[in-house]
Image 1 (cartoon, helix red, strand yellow):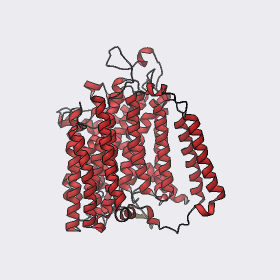
Image 2 (cartoon, one colour):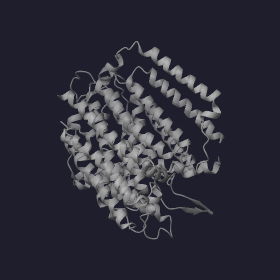
Image 3 (cartoon, chains in turn purple, blue, cyan):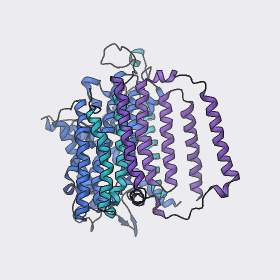
Image 4 (cartoon, one colour):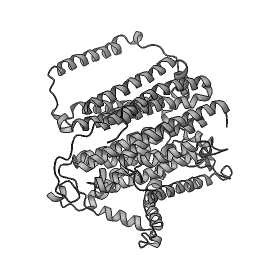
Length: 169
Length: 336
Length: 118
């Protein structure tokens, strides 16, 4: 158990540092790479939670696919142009306000309402995160969300095509 | 943690790295010799008997070359990019069983680092999807317009063919009911999946050649239009790392093809003599590698727009169709 | 289960160490005589013109979006493929519907010329 705890803290520190690195990087390509590191670290955290399927999906979709899109978009805009950026003076105060609220919320859950907020879960089997059990769950109990996902993907596809079309006229 | 276990992992990791490194060195020689023979030449035969020391000579030459970093390059990413490209080539082999379980001194060892993880195929997809970055970043950080274009083209090519690769994975999974490479190989004990999945096998072969940027899909090396693609500005050991990544990935892809469709380490008498397993696997891998070299010697490079059209308009629909047909047959016939 | 992935971590650490060692070897043994000509971008011997990093066509964006969507589709198909035998014909219909809806999008992309490369 204690090795898991040590691993968790190391990973948590990497995750937080990479998130900070992403925020403070002047160059947007560096930001993107810090975000990739962050996603991969989160994936390893999923592994620690006995969810290998989710971990691999996290790497494939987030770190592998979505961040490639980000990189392409950064290069589409031109990195030097993205670096100059558009200054948004209203952004920092709102960000500080919202993140402050989030931290307060975390603190409340952790220190004051521990017993009530976290639901009691019975012990789960070792095969909980396996592809087999995920498949059975997804295609029996979560059938409707699964089918709705395809409509969501369809909308995204049409949207992207329309966005790109307007550029070329 | 058990120290004996750690030693076992270290030894296995060492074997995998050794396999890729020597495989890379001798694959380059093998390729040059085979290409030469096909083109009625002799090929490198001066360094050592049969030219066997040629890879070593090449390595030493690259070691003593100056490494030029372009003045306007982004230094950090320029240096990190080859490392990011080569690591996936090493770690992919972790989930592939190199042989059946063998017992030495009363303890049984499995001949793979993590061959029985239940998400093996997904691990391969995940690592493959990460390996795009090294190439894009190499192109971007070089501050060279040809390198940037080459990097982007290779990246677009790799992600397009990754889809075909993903679809081709699904046939064997449907037949084996599992994503673990170990189960997929054992499901082929009666009949290899190349017989049941001929279309899937062809799809996988084409997509994997495109995924490792090999001829006839070698956009990065389209020297006529892009000088040399994403690695124009690289020299010395950094160039060697890119080279190693390409050939390492060729080897790994052959291991994956052999495991998914050609029965992996399976063959006659493997259950009696387990040590035959790795030998069978190596023979199959060598045959696939020979095929890839043969393809390079035979086909001219395909134009970039045709390459993307082939991926999206031909292979992707065929891949989907293959899955649907396989699924229907699996339901109708049940077992096989 | 997490223990199964520990050996992979060992391999990743070894591979990373090896790659950096190779880089370091090149640094140690290679000569270092930079000059402005060597540092300029290589353009087949022509005098370099323009900027090295330029904006790229929007087409790459489109390909990346389509890639994400089909990648998600494949991720959904994978666990389905593992349990198809248990689901039976019901599972076949489920996935048929899912793929059919996505195929509408695919045909739309094709007709709109999003798969064309010019």
